[in-house]
Length: 294
Image 1: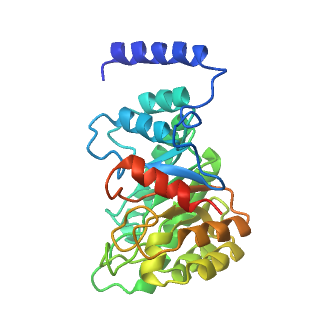
Image 2 (image 1 turned 180 degrees about the vertical axis):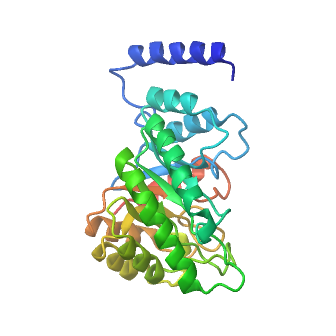
Image 3 (image 1 turned 90 degrees about the vertical axis):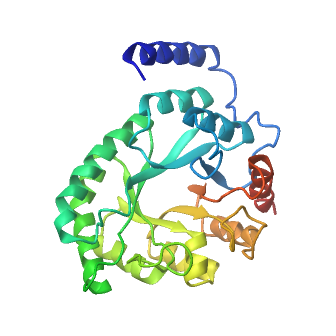
């Protein structure tokens, strides 16, 4: 996007914001309504994936009634345009990915790269008014034990934590599953993940507790959720049903029960819908909101 066009769009967005200050958000005006108990963020990488214009994906999420969005890499995206669009739509960027699978955080040679990248990503988060960012541990390293890789992840997160704290942005580490999606990943299951968070010892470093990954890895979602909250290790929650990684109601997870447990545990944060709509986005949104009714 050219500087001239960016200035034009920024000015147009600002003018629109002035005109709509007293109006409710686009999400609030959705014909589908909104969730009853849970604050959902639509993953606009998996939803509206056929839409080439990223800003239209944000509009689509708001139109369906989502008050928030999440996405994967921030690199290569027009952050100014995203910030302006979210402000206009009155939706929140709940989280994005600051450090992905490669290069691995579990490799000691990448420690300074992690710290530097987190610093850069924090600037992006501040621009987007985004409160947290996902980080990924990395895939297995040949000849290196899981314990040693986890120690390296702890060391990297301890070094990055002050950077995140200074920026006021939480880092959320995501355990994966190795049975279906991420064979060869070095971090899976709640036990090792909680252990890492405890070892880091910073309120600015917690877990991205993806219920889909946890279900595949260990089951007993509500029981393990309680353990995660008892350990003060959970910063963010994501969902998808299984099998298929689609919306609630398409697989074997009883999400209404899980949402009730989150409410019981006094979780008031975002739940990211990192699922793939089975047929279309409107039907998937209805399923998400329906699972939140009790």
